[in-house]
Every structure is written in C-alpha cells, then in structure tokens.
Length: 382
Image (tube, helix red, strand yellow):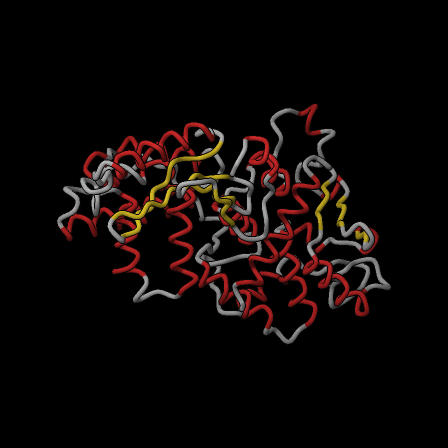
C-alpha cells in the first residue's frame, strides 16, 4: 500500500511504470518523474479506466477518497461510468485510437499519440463529458505546454484533440469540436529559420539515413549533433581538449558560446562512443572535425547542412540547427523539467548574476536526461 513518504521516494526509470495502491488505484510514474493517478474498476465483467489527476496536486488521500466514492456506487448497484460511457473525452479518445489510428499508422506513431493524450490531456479533461468541454479548457492545456517553450507541441496536441472531437461528431458522441475555436489563439510556430521534424517516424528515417552514411566524419558529426543538440557552430569548433572521457563531459569555453558563458554537455554512452570513433582519425589534431583542406581549421559551417541536403532534406525541411528544436519538443513532450531542458540548450538566462555561475546547474539531472534522449533516439531504430 502506498504512503506519502514512499511516493516521494519513487524515482523515475527508463520506462514508465505503475505502483499499485488498493482497490484498483495506482500511481503511474513517467520517465521524467511526473506522477499520475489511475483508477481501474470492473463492473459486470467490463473494465473501466479513469484518470484521477497528477500527484501531488491530487494527494494520496484525495485519490483514495475519489476511489472509495466510485467503489461505493458500484457496491450499491450503480455504475458511475454509465452516464458518461462513450462520452467522456478519455473514452472517446480511446475509441478514436482504436478505430481511426491503430489500423492505419505504425505502432510507434500510435504510441506517440497515446502518450500525448495520457501525459498531457487526460489529467485535465479525460474524465469530463465531451459536451461539457469548452475552448477555454483546451486553451489551458495549450498555455501550460507553451509555458515550457514548446509551441509546436501545443499545436500538435490541439490537432489530436480536434481529431478526437471531429470523430465524436461523426459518431454522434459529440455536438461540436471546441478546438476549432482556438484558431489564432495559440503561440505561432516559427520554423522559417530553423525547420525541424518531431514526428517519430520521420525522426527514425533521419537517424537511419545518418547511420547509413559512408563518410565517417559527416556521419559522426551528425550523430554527435543529434545526441547533444548543440548549435552547429559549437559542433564544428569542438576541440579534443574539451572532452573528458573519465567524466563523460564536453566542456565548451564561454568564448565559443552564443551567450559567452561556459557550457557543460553530459555525454551519453552513445555520444561518448561517437567521440571514441573519431579519435583514431583526428585525435592527434586540434579539432575533432577539421577542414578537409587543413587540420588547423574546423570544418566549414556548410558541411553539416550539405550532408543533410545529400540525405534528401530540403533547406526548408531540416537543418543542423533543427536537432535543437527536435530535442526540445520531444523532451518537453515527455515532461522533463523545463529548467533542465533550457539549461542544456544554453538559452539566455534572464538573471545575469545567476547566469554567471550556473554552467553546472542541474548537471546530475541533465546527465540523466541526456542519456534518456540518446536511448529514445536509438529505440526508434529497433
């Protein structure tokens, strides 16, 4: 049986997992450390599932109280799910996934859509009748995502919600699509300068194409950029003296950084393997990725993007800088701490005093996050 102390001690794992309480109540722990209450009840041989909210916003005692209220209704012969059956947003979304998504999409795409619903949407509106959900409820979801600097994810989540409602309208389970009223209300996605891709199927195709490259230098450069999502200039100016194999870190001096502050990049096992692969080729020189013409200079700023063009991606489809937006979107989607993400991206710090001393901030947490990111990329290829 769960206790508040035990819940607080629950650490995240590589994959989400559930810890059972009693009476069908469980706590689901995400790889990011976020925790969500789930309730499973059987009535007349049929299993019903319901989201009860996020811990600690919904406490252990509150979750148990909600569970007990449902079980009491079941005990006296009532079905608390009957009125809303087929009409809560969660049940409608599950039907939409089963009918419209699973038959035509790849499993990893199905899992991504399901994950976005379960992690982001269901805790807010999952248990509500579809015809009682208003545009302001959906805007609240979008604003929370936007607050994590993930506007593209906000648009994608709203697209999924809209698809669920439109399916509900066609099936006679919903009167309208309230997501349609949000046109123009969301923060626009600006991809003019740094286009990216965030669909798992497209990311898989990109990673396969990179791994299939014959040129060691460009293959390793693209892999290292994918695993570390540094800026292209930081990648091509990488010097061997900046890498610490023992600590598995890449420490970039402040003069090389956009914000002129030193930056630490924890190296995942995959990123460290890329570094080791390059060492026999360029390890005796200054730069990890030197120019083809002279080892005293780094490779051209056009090298990475030219390699991406050779893989078949147009300039307005993907660039080297797009790895940063890709990682930011996926990490935010899996609810990694926004401060860890922003620190790893080395974005501008509003507090200049704090910025002067925070290059090692959240380092243990960022190390764990970077390993998860590399594992996620590799998992796509299996």
